[in-house]
Length: 248
Ligand SMILES: NC(=O)c1ccc[n+]([C@@H]2O[C@H](COP(=O)([O-])OP(=O)(O)OC[C@H]3O[C@@H](n4cnc5c(N)ncnc54)[C@H](OP(=O)(O)O)[C@@H]3O)[C@@H](O)[C@H]2O)c1
Image 1 (cartoon, helix red, strand yellow):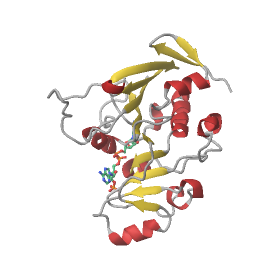
Image 2 (cartoon, protein in one colour; image 1 turned 135 degrees about the vertical axis):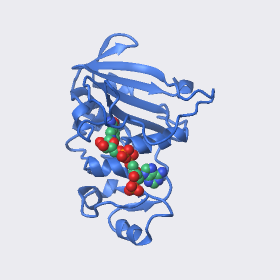
Image 3 (cartoon, helix red, strand yellow; image 1 turned 60 degrees about the vertical axis):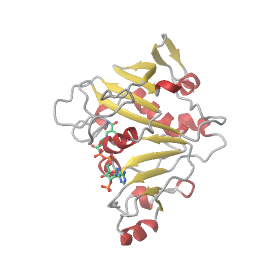
Image 4 (cartoon, protein in one colour; image 1 turned 120 degrees about the horizontal axis):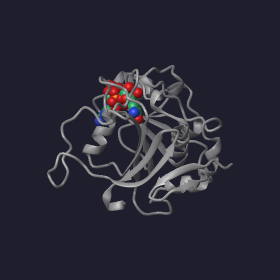
């Protein structure tokens, strides 16, 4: 299936599906780095991560296709419990959202699991995310030793509860802002796919990174610099990919 999206940086080009996927290929494919942690986020022109409390109002056609493609490329999708609760997260549905990108999963299971990060384990045990995940991609709940023990047992009935990672190499986080802030602060972010939506949201919403003090760069400057890899444009949306300078 061919679906052209316009690249405007580094040089103008119309990209078909294979060329588009190549723009987002992981450097660890075929061996190399132990893992690659990519974030996929969307922002309004004035920096808001949500409109009306959710990110959906910022999305567009190409953004949704790249969202699905990045899921197809990933081994696991890491999401904060806040986002899972607010956005009503469900297991990835390969037959619907991944149909165009099924070829990207050749040799792997049809869809990646969702891994929810939570301290409190305040998750709806009856929700599709916990009660309805497929056997090949059972939802993972990543928690801490401090989580309520009774709750841990209850959640373990429908999901795989773990305290640490389990060897997934291509990690895609879809936020939210509080989880992303900790990933950045820990120096773990390799890759940021950021869609800039042609929307002014006004005051009140978090930015895509929230809930902590200034970011300390090695130079002592209160910011971290990333390298721009490409910019795609579709219907007023700009789909930008940035990576750590060292791997740019
Ligand atoms: N614009 C975008 O691209 C985008 C993307 C995603 C989400 N969003 C928006 O962001 C909002 C939700 O994000 P959020 O920042 O409030 O929440 P979040 O980052 O999705 O999740 C925060 C929660 O994750 C758990 N958590 C975070 N760090 C943890 C750690 N180190 N150890 C254990 N658990 C940890 C805690 O869950 P417990 O409370 O269960 O302990 C915490 O309350 C929603 O409005 C959503 O629409 C926007």
